[in-house]
View 1 (tube, rainbow, N blue to C red):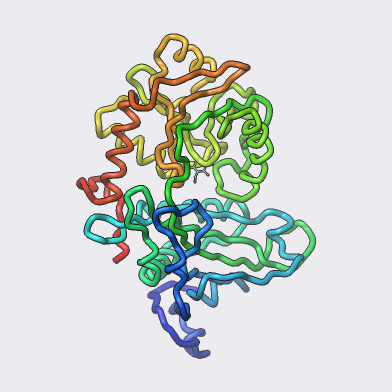
View 2 (spheres, protein in one colour):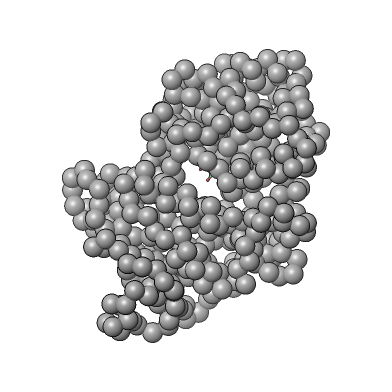
Length: 373
Ligand SMILES: Cc1ncc(COP(=O)(O)O)c(C=O)c1O
């Protein structure tokens, strides 16, 4: 199948149209919008869903039956492969409304490229990134009133794909569904984070699936995270699988530390998700004249820097979390307390600049923003 152009139509496809190499998205609009039920000043993260969603099904080696329809429940067989053997991947990205009322996305093509990278690792089909982008534009056009006005809020977009074969047995599915829905969201974390260094459980070994965004990575992290939460921490700071000595990432964020005047972060590889916020922060920090180092960081180095008053800042970076300050790091029975958040000049500057780019308040010299109008 060649993806030449994409037409959005609002009536069922005829057979001749289906046989052409033009991919089309059928649109079925919702009868009555649910937007009146939403309190945009108090949006719980991830519980309110906009009116429409995009769906595509993969069968016989191609993506077919592309449609946008009212968001709602789906029916599946209990034998659906994704439920048993974990072929399921997802992405997370955000749309912002700038001061001119324009809806802007932050680096959406990078998310679609990463979705396909995850698909390859999980032995799933890739989906054309331009198709996803066209579907997203149409989805946002339909649900543009769901993009919050408030500066601390945005429209979260969740593209995902899962195996739909009705079959019991471990093998790659032959059928898949790709879905994309959106939800207005406020802040993910509202207070600075207490994180605990994990020295026993492992998120991702070398050669594993750590750099993919597949559901299993998150399911396996729940139990160790729950143990840390029972001790009063919000999140884990994962360490490497081989020695539990080097810092990797945290929950749904990459992590960064200010040691002296340097901004230090672990390098990506096959055990860490290649965060789009991480990449953006590194580029932004360099452009602001900050000395950036991507290198392995041992927990011993963090303890030593803390004890010598050189650990000036620590924060998580991610689409949902944005820039999340870390106030305390628990390790080996000790709680390393970081400087008060109001003193964190580096992360504050980076967060302000990133927000200003997202809301169109400063020049987007990296060409990150994409207009959805
Ligand atoms: C495990 C993990 N690490 C890091 C991140 C940050 O990635 P991004 O900045 O692309 O959202 C995420 C969120 O997607 C994540 O789930």
